[in-house]
Amino acid sequence: MKQMKYLLDEEEIPKAWYNIQADLPTPLDPPLNPATKEPIRPEDLARIFPMELIKQEVSQERWIPIPEEVRDVYRIWRPTPLYRALRLEKALKTPARIYYKWEGVSPPGSHKPNTAVAQAYYNMKEGVQRLATETGAGQWGSALAFGTMLFGLKCTVYMVRVSYDQKPYRRIMMETWGAECVPSPSNRTEYGRRILKEDPNNPGSLGIAISEAIEDAATHDDTKYALGSVLNHVMLHQTVIGLEAKRQLEIAGDYPDVIFGCVGGGSNFSGLVFPFLADKLSGRKPELRAVSCEPKACPTLTKGPYMYDFGDSAAMTPLLKMYTLGHCFVPPPIHAGGLRYHGDAPLLCKLTHEGYMEAVAYHQTEVFQAAKLFAETEGFVVAPETSHAIKAVIDEALRCRETGEEKVILFNNSGHGHFDLAAYDAFLRGKLIDYEYPEKLVQEAIAKVPKV
Ligand SMILES: *Cc1c(COP(=O)(O)O)cnc(C)c1O
Image 1 (tube, rainbow, N blue to C red):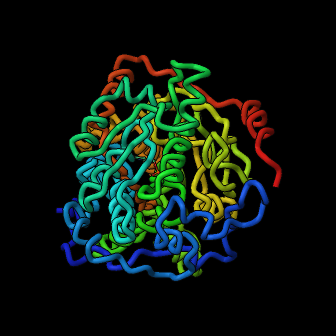
Image 2: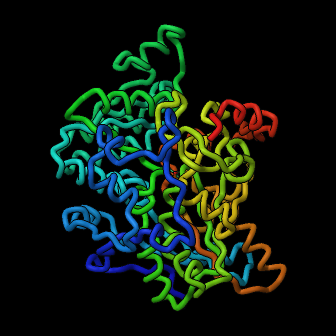
Image 3: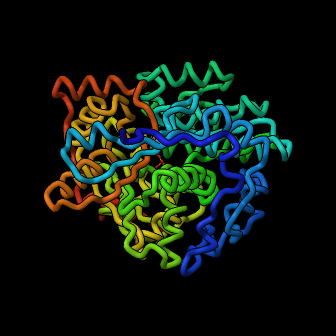
């Protein structure tokens, strides 16, 4: 009988994170100070991030040791299982071998605590009392609430107003773990008060919530800011996923031909793919393909230009070199809330720009169809974000059926969809609307990005 899942022992939780910066053919373009257009200095970031994370952000060391206290927390759910999707393969009648790493087993239900726990730890070590952050639908906020609770920090989560009103379950989770959840825009910050004055019923956006959380951190000495994706240190922490998967595939006697992952800010996919991309960068696996999967409604990698832009809509963050839809981008209301960010991680963008990675985009209806087939075969009801990767995997497996190729396909199953059942309901009732973000709006938004 074929083996269905590959499990590792607790001692096999990686002891170091893999830093792909050490292996890039050319260095990453640095973040810029928007006023001077000069590279940001580490001191500029010290008000909102702890020193250790700032060091990791720019580190060129290939391996960064994972503190024992962080590994000890990882033991709650890591190593995560690697599954062979035997039932999906059978349903598709494909000769391809499909594997997936299952990150939905963490207490918050996604990959996000891999970095939330590490960030909470380093802040605690440096005497920080409280972390401030933003959250859309609540995935990141709940992961940080979990991480801060374990290391005795307070946590304030600015949650986008519409989600706060419409999606109470993740808020309740955050509060259960002891975090304070504030609907954004709020009257806690200068920026929030300004927005509420213009429109007391402003529904909020991720960009506004980021700006509020940064302002909170910058104006309180005991408080720092935490970001759940995009930054180099977040990609770094997520590499535990790929490092474990590599070991598990070794046990299975396989190596991927193609790797898929959904991309919102890029962290779950980078975390899986970077340890494998090391083999492509070094020339050992020149044929390896890595494909980012995103919504057609927020087509950052497939339609955005590669240029410097702000990370937030209030234009307060440093300028980051990335594919972007413009920091003023207003995302259409699709159900994959975690994939609606206007930019993507500079590391993933650079590797895409230089041809080491590719990207595809899908409509939400086809993505939910794929998620339904996955639930019917593999059993797991996955997050709408993750479903983008599953759509790509199914398409690839069907191509293999045509050609007879026994390709090895790997993807990151980044989280469960137990709090997204209203979206499944809309799909099942035929109420989902597909939306393609028009090229013209991309051009208009890009015109508002400062020239570097
Ligand atoms: C947040 C989230 C994503 C998107 O964020 P990335 O940084 O691109 O990984 C994807 N899947 C799940 C389950 C998420 O919670």
